[in-house]
Image (tube, rainbow, N blue to C red):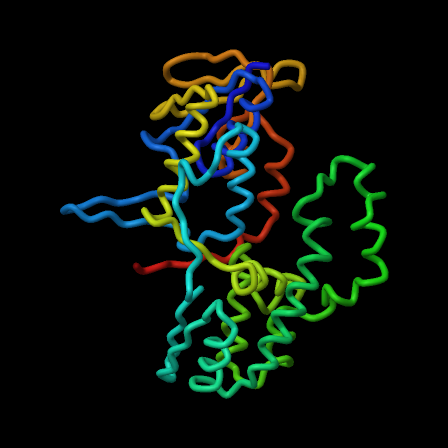
Length: 309
């Protein structure tokens, strides 16, 4: 099949690599003159600054993209596990390092907080249990395939639902489970990974702490943007065509199927389109009409953040 991928962010790059590895002819259209999307970089006066995400978790998922192309991620990307996942500063003057190594973390808790170390380790244990229970169902499952609902992860879910802590908000769980409000704030921040408020989202999302604090946070030696550079190189090696600086103006639909993408330069015929751009932008700008537009207009925008480096 001839497939157009719109957007060269991480999602677009990953989609293009998987499709090319499956034997499809893939062209990626990107309005900017460099790939990366929300992961970008700024260069000035001989210095380089990453912009966007600052932690690299689950590197094995990136590794899958290299595996399916018969490549080794280490030939493209050099990264290390961080000793300190995050360093927190509070208005009270508290400075807290969330060390990955348990002995150092125990001492840090005792020296800088009012919390009992066992309460934090109990939470990390519960986060791991919730992740191992929920991730196969909610993160790594294709909900479009009904047959997946008969698999082992789904069958064991009903008897262990209590471990997912559905009926408390994240903030309630954290304020009840910890004595130190600053530690509660640290665990509240995991809601922001998905743009949620800890005061409204179910405590189920406390499982995210497992990714960062148990499995570990990583950092590429040449900065976060080197992830983009590695995936871009891999995609080019896999035969993906990149049309950088070429903005898609419309997705042309015939008989309810994508037939072409229109840019200022060309009308590019396709058998399918992967639209890896903001859903609202796509619904409002790339189609004559798309039914998701009404739903998006009713939706509440998610929370965001301003980050100073």
